[in-house]
Image (cartoon, rainbow over the protein chains, first blue to last red):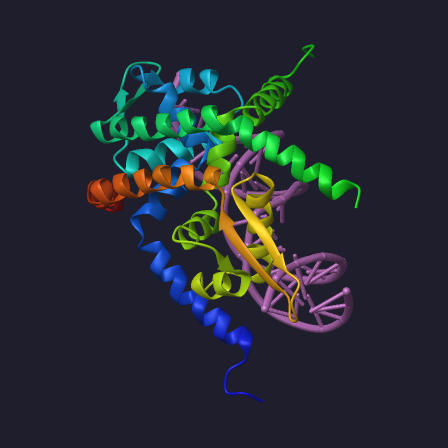
Length: 135
Length: 135
DNA sequence: CAGCATCCTGAAGGATACTG
DNA sequence: CAGTATCCTTCAGGATGCTG
């Protein structure tokens, strides 16, 4: 029996890697904007502040849980501000911070790339699927 | 009993939205590059072709399953090519296609933004956590 | 060497019900 | 209105063992 199995070595490597990854700024960013709801909220807030219920309607398919959870995350990261107006009933507005706004170009760049190259991707995909299906 | 409950309406909205989302190029792209292993593989292949086992070593914490699965996905989408050299033992090289290469600037832009703004994020996060903890 | 097939667990996220 | 709390399902992804 070896001092360390291959599995253990891999596990160690992963642990080290995970630690490294957790500290990687690019990774943190991608983890954030890769979230489906994050990009949708960012877009929904792009032209100005919105109320909680407005966001829920604009984004249509979102559950309360995910909406709240995502907004909290964005607030925590300084991407949006949450403003409570203690009227009756309560009113809560969300708005992008400068930091949140600075993220928009990146999201748009991604959109740009996607729209430019998506056909290539689809073509490649169709070709790949075709070759695989008949042997 | 209403013709349609709120839950049903939300479910319908989600179904419609999911369909819409699935067809959204930007969404497709984000789904791809948000994958942890995708960005790592892209980077690993940035300076030239690599063998399967090399990738496994360079990316350290990856499991065979995810490595293969991710590479297949990238190949299918036309981001990488897979070249088999039928020697003994077999040798397989992966290389970025022009399409794959065209994605690198975007990944780097993300990295750039992250490195520029990550401190702001961390500061905001610390502030947020501080206010919440003794409320 | 470069995979594939299988099993299994943890975590994300939707549905639902309740509250200030 | 704007959430919070709970339960429950789904499934991404790791471990393991086998193959051309």
